[in-house]
Length: 140
Image (tube, rainbow, N blue to C red; front, top):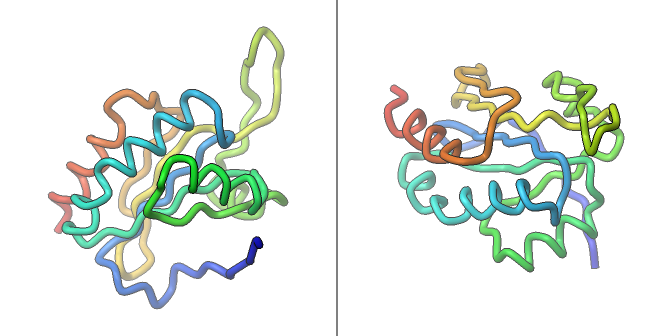
């Protein structure tokens, strides 16, 4: 059974929140990225960070994807693109020779006061999660 919860950045207990936007559940790059966040999740928690993945996929798709990969963090469903638009991650992209509108792979770190302290846009998956963890660990 799918359930919807409202997510708010305010009132979070974490020292920082990592929001990573990805194009689509069950695609190669997005699967690799989610696995990388999963594998480093204990280090993020030890550094006082919470992690949330966001895409336009449905809650049902997220629940299946989360279970399949055994993800310890929540995935946020943004089918109406409200959060994607707030963070400016909707872009025209080239996919298989066609121009399509989609989510630009991006990551944001927000501190405990709700201030955006770091962003990565249009990134490549390889090595990215390590870079985010390094930033979170060294953030003061």
